[in-house]
Image (cartoon, rainbow, N blue to C red; front, side, top):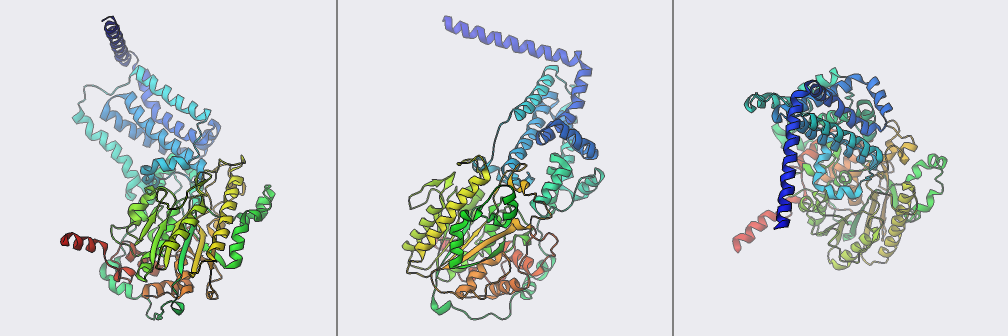
Length: 629
């Protein structure tokens, strides 16, 4: 009983204290009207400065930005003021409105800080689509809570606590029904600045935002320097929305006639060389890049003898054919390169989305693996990571893979190297698939071993740690190919890296190499290897660089795979326009043929010939099976 009285007394004391605080805050609202007006007026300026300061790190840099770009800072403050006013009208409470906006601004600011420090790419609105994969992303990110970050967050908390104590409020006599419309109007106005070109273009021009087309990561980075974080985030959001792919007018009017003019009229009658259907192994190696392209510059920075890290790759190249592919991405967005390999189509033709697989319609897809399946192959996809990341399991389930293996599905012993599953485990799994499959096998493997972060390792230099992982992967590839050489089944291997690695932002190796939008093209050039355990005529393969989406057709050419008019059209186009890439050639004109064929297969009616014309429709099989049951 005594204990019960004690708890009751404590609760009563707490309630009395809360009531006294409430009374004091209500008193402060009336007692300090000038202080409250100042808090309300200063808040938009305060939160903008704190969000930008979190990126600039030093107040002096923020002051320089404001002096150089006063109109952009004014734009940021007006947007923040509109958001704040909208929240204030809706909720009346000054401190609560500040809390909501502070959470929004500082959460975005901190995300931008961590993202750029991790891979040198700035945060854009389309990155929000990855929120569902937050757990995976945190394993990649270089997250470091610094004293400076804690200080800036503490200042924000102190401002909100001050507002809580002095309790500025909107006039209590104005009912919600009268506040609702103007409050929503303020918020809608902010949304319209981003989403409606008719509004955004004159507004951005008025406040002198940098609106030049951002054709690659380095142009984006320069735009960030000009606009600062908040204006950059909004302007690139507008840019991405206005870049939405629309159905070509000619396709809408008469798609069949339009496609006819782009499809090859003459198609050779091929049925594999001497009837041999080789295993086709496609290895897209995560972040595998040959930094010897920068040997001279790296040597000046103290990085010597780079050849030691690529011994295995050079051995593979000496036994096969090597060339250069132009990949559609740098440092991140692996699925761009994966899309081009699995569809044989350019991401440039669908306006370079960061996640092209999210654009696909819910239907069976006319993919490269579907061609192999129609030719009597068993098809498999191997990726040693979470099946939910990029929604791969759900989306790729429509790509005509017979088998899909993710991190929990391996049938061989699993071990890690660094943070992720060892590339050698992937190679062992491919061998197991070859042994277990009676039909010829097509495999696409996207590895994971060399993914960031590179903070773990024997060195404090993340670039050295990266090179060590690369060496392990390179040697593993050579060993894998040595084993395949002993396999009695004809086998061909395509090996290519998806992109140069994600390395730190301001102090990373790319900054040390002084790479800018003017000299970044090398970062989109990836060395590829075509290897086989039997004689192949590689004399027809192109000596010049070609875009990654042509790689599947290089393999088909080598093995004399059957062709339809679509495949032949793509092979013909490889000769006339070998590179079609926004990042690599920012000023390149649109290619109507490639754009139309891509639209038809991704968002159109798939009028162009594809393997889907001969493969059974799984949905129809399901219906028939249900009916028979």
